[in-house]
Length: 336
Ligand code: KG4
Ligand code: ZN
Image (tube, rainbow, N blue to C red):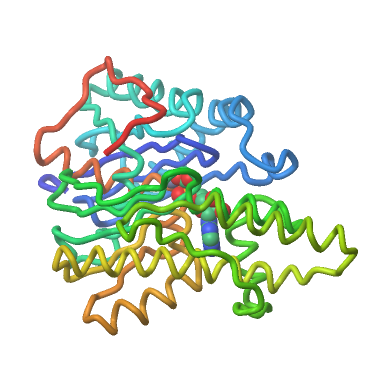
């Protein structure tokens, strides 16, 4: 173990308290995720103050579990990594203060990691041969970006959402058709029983660049529901879910494939919670492989928030000496 770089990573940017131990960036020794979904479900979304309180309660337990499951002690570690943003400020601060306290007490370097960068790096864990450059779509509850990954820690943002994030659109549509929270996985599941060409929801290609907009399709679904209600017509939730998903998936996959081709990337990669969407994976595989691209995405557990992806990003920062000091703070709108 002498030459191996073992990093303890902590993630608490939203409603998952997670800790992981990574070996040399790409090997997961442990990845413990304590989700608060059941707590926030009854509110229909994440309540920031409630999330912070649950992070406080869980973080030490999750870290102990991650260390035990990895079979390591603090003496084996080379650094402590933590998400510093973007995310909910109160939630981020719990991870940050814990990481700082541990780094100080154990005399270990501290590494602040960008959450979006973590999502992209999740692809390195299961694709051992993957090296930059490559083009990646990051689509989660808070972000939708097409990123040209130029090198480790070097990114060019090719496009971003102008309004809602893709996951946010899934969550809002899910709520409108009476599904629970988080909506993405529920829409994904219900869509399997629906007709994806039943309703022609708009597809926002905008000016043909790589930016996204999801507020129009969300309004269109709401208008469709209102109009059915006014006319006292029954709705078919599965058809709405399938048609909505098909429109979003078409735009996401078309833009990602075009961006990858423009940059002559060998890969079209997905990352973030929405990357676990069954139909997005299916459509992207078909479109991407038709154009000679290698389509990759992390397994679902590494798409949604987890500390392993933070540990992977931290490893490449460690190699470059990109460390943080104790002034490291939570930056809710941190960009890459
Ligand atoms: O990456 P993530 O766990 O948290 C953020 O950084 O935001 O992403 C959560 C988002 C939620 O909006 C959730 O509804 C969406 O990802 N999501 C999905 C699926 N699984 C999670 N959206 C569509 N299909 C899915 N299967
Ligand atoms: Zn995330």
